[in-house]
Length: 539
Image: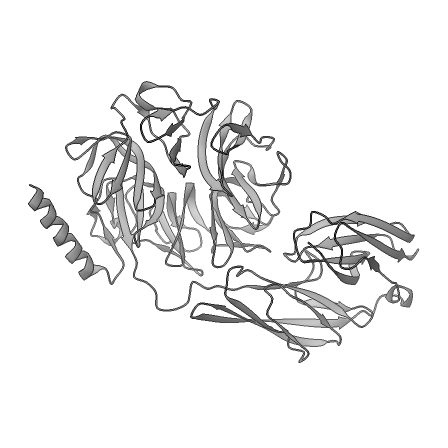
């Protein structure tokens, strides 16, 4: 019997080598998972193994219930019996323990742990102190373990250092479904959009948040895109994108127009430079392309993944060069007329691409958030323009501002234009052997409708560089209805806006918590930027 199994493995590997040059489904994971409702609710990668959770009682001839580990082509269990009620769908490995959570009942071996339990390598334990409500998502961020879910009082966020749990509540939603760190901010997806942490337990809605459920979030670390999935129809207030959208650190984008259905909790994964996502989905919105529960976004279009599956996809993870797909289905490749039987789990293989399509730089220019990215005005003979690129982790950036004056190798530089005209700005991004160049045409215009008094207005900022605080002095003429000072970070985010009085203004602002090398101070009259100055930050 042992020799037969080894022979089977050899045949499988030879077959895999033969067919792995093209995209294809593979279903070999040892013996069949069976007995129960045959649904796999979640998957977790743990080094050289992966763990599944679901409603199954046997794998082959072995009694392995609810949670199982696949390592070295063998399945092992976690001391669970068929009496176990429910199954976890979220997992996290943290400080040599396995943390599990479920949006439903999850009672290891009949012990009620309030849908949350911890495996210490020997036995299942409750949280300390016990956690009320349900746990939907788990994520290790900056050496702390975060958990999100819902309780009697609504959405909840918890954090632990491995000893005790603390609540970080006050999100104005009923359910929290996902959590992630993006651009040094902690973001939580809820049934009422996307929220960011602005204090220890204080939250604000993220600008342009998806309007509805945010079940899944994923950061493409190469391009620094934030992908969100769930059940919504609009992002950025007016951009139609059903159930899935992208944010580049500066603005929101639709993925075509999205898909019909829901992207499920946590079901997003990057594989071969493309975004894969799954859930209760059948077709794309824009051209009714059938995708059947799993889709692939290649940066331009949504595609079916090998004919899709016959039922809901509940989990996606990359493991040993393949994409593992788990859920409540019995077949894959169902749209191609040649269905392959697979009980709740299969793996999808795509050959490595020989091109550099994974590198997708974007370029933004701005003086004031929400104002034109294409036209800027000279004030006192200068137009200070800020530039943004999304590729935070690329090897190098090379800017050419098109004025023949200077270049830059910063990721997000600021450049001063001194003459009106049309400029072709170019950015070349290098990542390993991949090189991409993008261009943007901007116009520098003279201010023709502003008085000489305004043109000569002086904006004074000191000290510069600043460390603890900055002083701002400026003068507002009587003939302007509104005036303000706006402070912009290199990312384009406005961190402060201060209304000004007519006449002389003197302002003191703390800069001690600005975690950037510089900021831009804009002087705005009647919603127009009339002066901008760059202030350096000493750390």
